[in-house]
Length: 550
Image 1 (cartoon, helix red, strand yellow):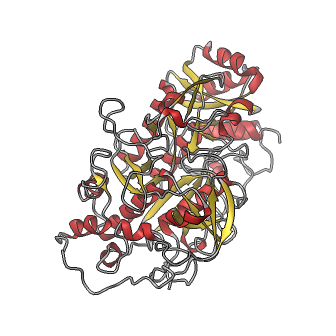
Image 2 (cartoon, rainbow, N blue to C red; image 1 turned 120 degrees about the vertical axis):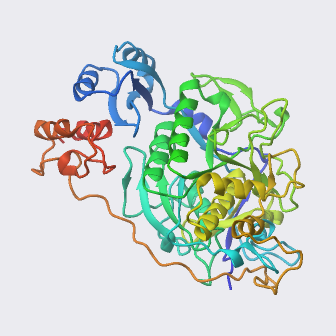
Image 3 (cartoon, rainbow, N blue to C red; image 1 turned 60 degrees about the horizontal axis):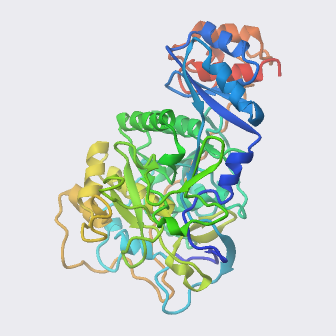
């Protein structure tokens, strides 16, 4: 039987439950010591273009490229940002230059505390799986499909505790995209850092191991995950990291991408939104289903905290402009994304959740799923329980928690019928949703995992449940089946980055090899493909440049 171990929960102290991202994130935007600029070339740059542009810039340095685009990312000190932008903008080879904007994690942050199993009268410890019909006392989605280890969900997030007892067997690969994307042998996070730990919680909702007599059940059941870290050492999640991560996942055949992150439209400029949309369109074109959290700024303007919060809009200099109330989030508002609002245990829209507002923001939110809602220790069980670093388990809430339920469902559908297209999977999820739940607040209603899977199999949902499959114990346990086979993360290459000829040095000879193969689909460090994406491109040049004579 599945059991929750001691659970960490969130307690809001004197603060109201407002939308999420990075609790100190608004301050971080003002105080970071360096910033990134994205420079887009007018045409696909030649090797000489790259060499010339990078050689003459005094206020910034090239650090990496955006895969599959004409864009490169430059870094400048915060004090030199304006000068660096002007210097790059004056270059005749460049079409546009804009700031690499930050995205946010879409959960509700708070302090941590410990608790034992819930008191009598509390809800099932995984009520969310019952509400969405993954589990149940009658027939449920997991009776129709239990997923497959061959179906991958990419969790693009803050990273993960890769040694967690309920996750370690469910990861096909670990990838760091805070520079050029590359595999890493392991990941670790600080359990006391809510932002770092976010990805571990999300991953558990997608695909925690099952029937291992510990922890929680994941919505995707036997589904495996590709974990992609896009939070850097300064706690920032940049658009460039996001863009590379989405393309990386799509190029490697993941079926579903989960994005429990985003930014208010008011904190983004036109080029940034275009870059986000471009990455999403690329993945969609590769057959991937993209699921994104709709955002946690659904509360009215009056909920604004005087000291600043994650629903505030700032100008390019970090000055407060206004407080956002139910405004669009990206990538949730990007075309072809399944955007997910949050529900509480009673199938009501969570008070923090974004929602459709036809006269204002339009109908951009697709469906709703359990996201939880609570404010104190006494009602923590009304949040979403999932994995937390250090073999712990944690209650959290937010549209960040709602989205991975939908990602898990998409994985179950792909596992049931692998020949389905992403368009078909998206349609099954949306058209099977229960419209009567929060009518008008989303386009389709609340997800119904059982109805979606029975629609896929051509079976009409029965009004009379079959014999019980998942019977909760008095403590609210959920019985769940056997975990899938273990996959070992692929370690990074042992070659020195940028060393094409293998002589232990990164020098002009390696540049010559890179230049010889530039813009060709050739793999291997010996050919100049230093990031291993199968093409010798600008990202590889950036790797060579940043390791030159080191």
